[in-house]
Amino acid sequence: MTKKVLTIQDISCYGSCSTTVALPILSALGHECVILPSAILSTHTGGFKDFTVLDLTDEMPKIIEHWKKEGIKFDCIYTGYIGNKKQFDYIIDVKENLLNEDGLFIVDPAMADNGKMYYGLGDDIVEGMKSICSIADYIIPNITEACFLTGNKYQEIHDDMFINNLLGDLYRLGCKNVILTGYQDDEESIGAICYDGLTKTTVLKEKIEKSYHGTGDIFSSIIVGNILNNIDIKKNLDLATDFIVDSILNTIEDDTHEYGVHYEEILKKYKDKDE
Ligand code: PXL
Image (cartoon, rainbow, N blue to C red; front, side, top):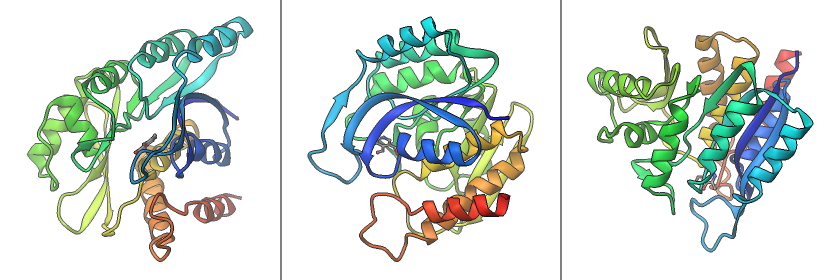
């Protein structure tokens, strides 16, 4: 059955990330994707100079009030990049008032990578992300975001003690499940781990020495779509990590596309396999 998913994140008009990837991926996985844009940017903030930003903080409560009057409800709310701390209160309002009783609240605290916060984001965004992680059914941080959320020191290679501390600290924020991405137990492999407070489910793939913007947003969109399709977590992690590896391999020869990945042909193959 088609589920109604609300995604709350920015629209980066050019750049293959956030809302512009969530929409096609969630609909390809069979869901109605509704959007609440947090801002409109000419491009994402990584690797472009002089991008434009229209902050939509003041528009958000008006949209939410209209939906309340219309009696609109969602089966899932999935949040990503948020550039203004005031928006966390609106997100909590939407979660409390517009999510069906058995609906899922999923947070990708998209705010950092490679040991650093994204351009222009500071401690207030970390605090806001912590507040929504504490009430989430799933959170999907990468290693850098996980370190900012928990105060652990960032490192590139992750032994068992580092990972177990990180997973425990993330879980203690209050969420029900953690899906940690960018896990590297050595130089050659990379993957993701799901932790539900009891069990760890891990998927590792061969590492490709190239990374692109937007892959975290693509990964999360697939994970969200497949949670709603009741795909078990091991298979979900496996499909999502393979999807990212295939998208990177499909982009690596094109040096005009450094700002994101060519995932569209991979999505088409994924759908064709499904039918
Ligand atoms: O892909 C994450 C992302 C989303 N939105 C904006 C960004 C970034 C990463 O840099 O700048 C605006």
